[in-house]
Length: 94
Image 1 (tube, rainbow, N blue to C red):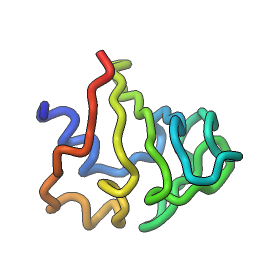
Image 2: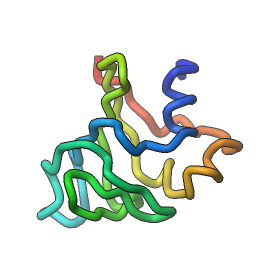
Image 3: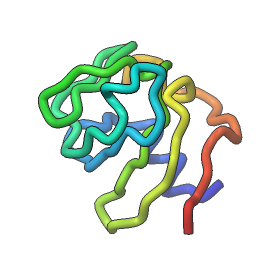
């Protein structure tokens, strides 16, 4: 896993572009936009709250690199992710 991906997953996701590519709540799939807010269990993408644990996100880094991340990996408060060990539950679509 690249250091950049590790760094992004350990930081606050607010301001990054995200798309929900899989979700147990089918009405949430396809939501795309900026991450407006974040709590321990939820992300607010394009003005709509979604549970992190139930979704797979396509996150776009500031350099336009994209990667998929299972929401269960980031299902923590942003400040708690700084110290976490990142498991191999991500996939680089390139």
